[in-house]
Amino acid sequence: MERNITLIALFAALIAALGLVPSFMLASGVPISAQSMGVMLAGTILGARRGALAVLLVLFLVALGLPLLAGGRAGLGVFAGPTMGFLVGWPVAAFVTGWLAGRWRDGTPVVMPAIAAFIGGVIVLYAFGIGGFAIIADKTLLQSAAVMGVYVPGDIVKAVLTGFITEGVLRARPGLARG
Amino acid sequence: MLSLTSDIRTPWHRVPAGAKLLTLLAATALAFWLRTPGQAGVFLAAVWALYLPGGGRFLRQGLRLMKPVLPFVVIILGWHWFTGALAAGVVIVARIVALVSLANLVTMTTRLQDMLDRVDAALALLRLPARWRRRLALSVALVIRFTPVLVQKGAALGQAWRARSTRRPGWRLVLPFALVALDDAERVAEALRARSGGL
Image 1: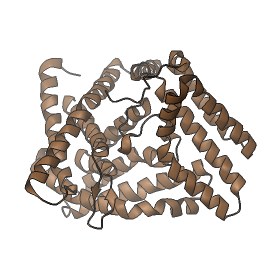
Image 2 (image 1 turned 180 degrees about the horizontal axis):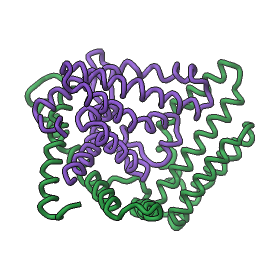
Image 3 (image 1 turned 60 degrees about the vertical axis):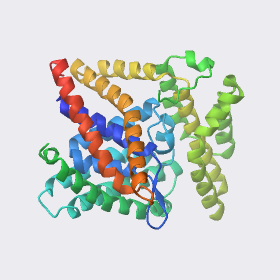
Image 4 (image 1 turned 135 degrees about the vertical axis):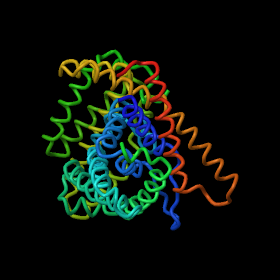
């Protein structure tokens, strides 16, 4: 039990830290924040349940007012803002990513966790993000998708990187894959 | 340490956290009934008037917290102007800005410990086992303690990279960063097992 709690808490701290360190540049010169990649990694590395709990813990502390989101954002205000759907979708995205990555653990390394991260961290997450924006901004789902679509390419890149990083972590710490 | 609670004292700091959270809930429900720019404007003005007892510096702190919402304000207003429905756009933007401002006001005037006490009281009301509540409290403490530690270790990894390469540190740093966090988690778990006698 102690190990589960510390893994969940330290991964939550890692997700927070990834939002606080400066964003990194892609080869194209486009800066991307590593925080949403942290959500994908929570699923692929910790598994569905622990990954979702780590993300929920981050959101719980953000709601209480700790500035743990990228750019130091925090407070109840972020859950009333236009991107609240993404935040609500984070734990679900981590869960789906972890569930798929767990089922495909024996599949092709790098590729399977990347696909899991794409399905959970892009398709599922954007369903929530677009839905949330549609509610808050009183738009149709199509109109919301048009606004949010600009972020998709960066998140696809993060899903691919998640595949590489997951493979590296599980090779370095094989005990994690066994739970 | 990390917290958005403002050090500028306002009358709202003395209002119990539970009362502020209930007011926020009621205001959120009310905001979705606003239909005209006039109604939405009055609602927004009323919310911003709540910042005034804190003085100019408090107001500026509140405005700074609104920066991430600004791009969406521009997009939504631009969209509605383009489609010829500017009045509807103004209502939507005023509603978003007012609700985010009000929620930020609650965060800025409520200490973290008071928020945690409210959560604990709510969990007790739900009759969640004390064991679960202890685990939540420990998890919260671990995140608060280890986030600055990990930020520091991340910075050290970045410096080590720069000492060896002329290129900017990129995504490759995330792998050792994750390993640092996972190894810390294993060590803390061992220490807890040795001292706590089970959670």
